[in-house]
Amino acid sequence: MSRAACLLVIISLMSPAAEALDNGLALKPTMGWLHWERFMCNIDCDTDPNNCISEHLYMQMADVMVKEGWKEAGYEYVCIDDCWPSHQRDAQGRLQADPKRFPGGIKKLADYIHSNGLKLGIYADVGDKTCAGYPGSLGYYEKDAQTFADWDVDLLKFDGCFMNRALLGEGYTNMSKALNNTGRPILYSCEWPLYEWPLKQPNYTAIRETCNHWRNFDDVFDSWSSVKSILDWTAAHQDIIVPAAGPGGWNDPDMLVIGNFGLSHNQQESQMALWAIMASPLLMSNDLRDICPRSKELLQNKRIIDISQDSMGKQGYRTAKGNNFEVWERPLSKNRLAVAVLNKLETGGPRGFNIGAAPGWKICGPQCNVTQILPQYKEMGVQTQQSKIIVSVNPSGTALLTVTPISSDFTRLHKLNWQGTFVRRKHTIL
Ligand code: GAL
Figure (tube, rainbow, N blue to C red):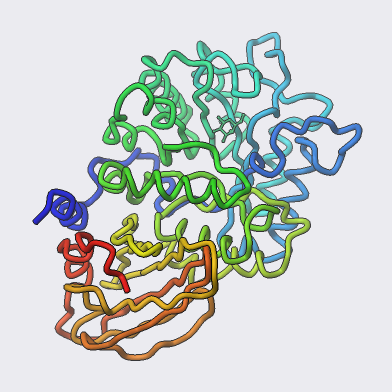
């Protein structure tokens, strides 16, 4: 067995490598909305009052989340990113919201969000300044953690700009302790590994003990090349990062940009499917007040959300690649499996992919039920080891399926897939 195959077998048998941060949060990947990719650092409320970073934006988003089925679908956190604070701390050294854009202050905003049955997230930075140049938390971890707790904040995204990289671990750990010491459960979203990778391979055991999720790689942009680069990075590092994920702590490949301008509908389906396979936080960055019905339906697709939120909490990973196809698999509870087939060829029309054809890889044994979820819902019925299932995958689109065993003999689908044969195959996908 090759080293890579061996590692994948080990991953499949292992529970997450370390204990998760023990704050009882993020037992499933976080779902919600985060302003950054869509609204960035737009602070111009005079000319763009509807889209600037202000309390109105989060209040409106919360209203829509309740009215338009987002909350019911599971999206819960309404998150502020950079550019919310005033450039000066107050006389007691506390962070304060920009008074013009947040006249009610953050506590009032939190009350409003809570009265809608939602949760509020906020943003700060482990270093001297935030990435956009607002006051950082270095030297103020306890004070800032207590301020966020006093405001009844529910999540902190803690960025890593303007920080000595050698001190990142210390900074992120100290803020984690400071948050715990407040006694308020505050979900802790880190960017520690992203900033540490240029220096050394991050210690994912420590990161999992410290954070509820962690960014590993570049910011997502509203483009297919950005989404692809995230998938490529994740697959290239899966042996290192996948074992770290599990209830309480998740790899964070950044926001969903579905419903914006840059992705075709097929590409939006690919992001949604793969984010579910990767057990990623589902934090949308889009304008829920004005979103096309197809994107909304995709983001609220219950079957995909069920994969994302599966109770076993194992992250999936890429198991095969060739002929411009990629296969990603995620083991699910009750011995089920989610399979995503991504067509990376950006030319031509739909291409057929035979998911039963790989040597050594059977769709199931002796029998299973196969359901196709994307690009459209289809019950594919009972299949056997002899089955050939050909799915049609659009250029830059993804076919997403679930496989459910129906035998009392309970053949271990996951083991079958992760014995390595599938992974070692070289470009013989069709
Ligand atoms: C980046 C971070 C983004 C966003 C931005 C704000 O470093 O990765 O997600 O938070 O800073 O300035």
